[in-house]
Image 1 (cartoon, rainbow, N blue to C red):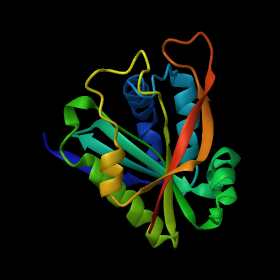
Image 2: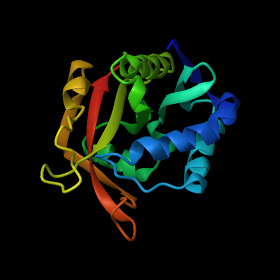
Image 3: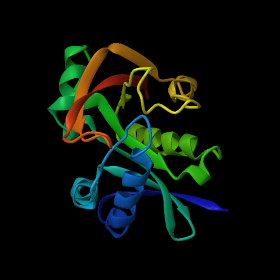
Image 4: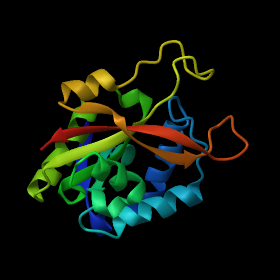
Length: 195
């Protein structure tokens, strides 16, 4: 399987929106996100990326099939739920390029795509003068009932990439878990790296 890594901005993202939405729902259904997504929400969320030239979606393509994607945008374009905790921790939000999420179909994992996603987002942020990259990750308890026995968090991978976890810099995002009757707030912790 020969994969193509394709950075896209603005209108170039639009043809992939439905495929991206389906992939996000599929991948985020697994632990640790356990996300009960809908196509309508996902397509609406992703349209924001297609509407802005400074937003990035990095695609992983197997032929014409979208098998992975990674997103990023200027932190100030994301919203206060992400910018405010970093500002309160002493970071200048105007200097931060925010990494949204990365999703990759299970059959394509372990082939360097995660590194390619980070490389492309870091390159894009540096080229636009951002000084730091940041993202946040959901925190689930070690004894969560839906945690698979073989689950391995990505912390070691992120640390090898030079990212530092900031346990005291937190926010929360709200979504519905696959075992919930309604959405609830999920704790998120920030990671950063100088670009």
